Length: 361
Image (cartoon, rainbow, N blue to C red; front, side, top):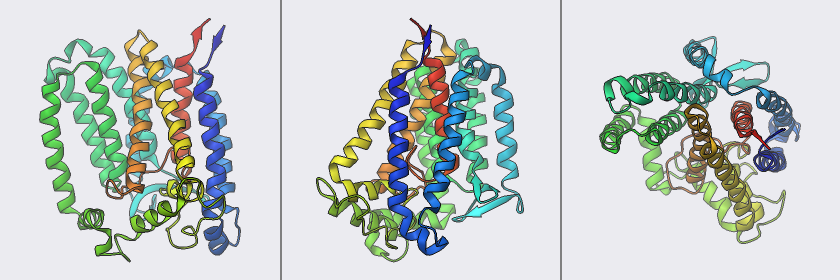
């Protein structure tokens, strides 16, 4: 008989239930004002949750070896979508980034699906090229070329947060595959130089750095979001102000149901509530790593680790922004933030992990 990792699945379901409650709490004031429907955002998220769970169930039934065979096709499809979304009239601009396809009242973000595609492709590539990893030209440079090509396409949108998640995740997979540590030192230096260049050529990124260092230098402009986020977290105390009682969601913190939903959790449920969320994400990390460690074959090992690490990096980046540790990146909190593309891709990743986790009793 075969079974899934039930702990992983139950943890994700709990996070999704909490998400629906918090999206309603965080958005009903804004939704009532903008759409005259307090339930607008939570209904949309509920639809995506239902669709996502169906997809998760289907994905969990598909043998992960299928992705090994279709890795090239999946990656090429995502590259085509990344190019199409940059074309005016096809891609839609939201919050200054042309990174969405508009389908009815919903938006689909191809860069989210690219994260999964590149993890699958890299896992396959490293299994086939494992004996060449000591030779940088044959083993490492080809995958880095593809990585930075995709990063370039994503930066044309621009979507710096997603681009950084992809780079960090792929570098982590390369590290566990056995690439020499000296290589990463040189790559890290180049990465720092590259980030500095990206900041210099885009003034709005420099504004974000300035507001990160001192948000109160422009409290009504670039520093507004982080200041309002801290004002939400501060009054939460140990137990919070209570469900539905957040003040910052009332037109202070912009669209709190998205990237800054953790701020509302902290305000309404305090330190206890935030620890519960962190504990649930820690369970996902531990279960994902255990699934990867159990595998003897390289492809599912790399795939499980990559999917787990990508979710973890995204969680860390989002929480770091919310509490002011790093500049605003526009990265969502997996399973919690409002947004269909983020939720669907996260559930697809969990579906693949569940399939890998099957084992003979």
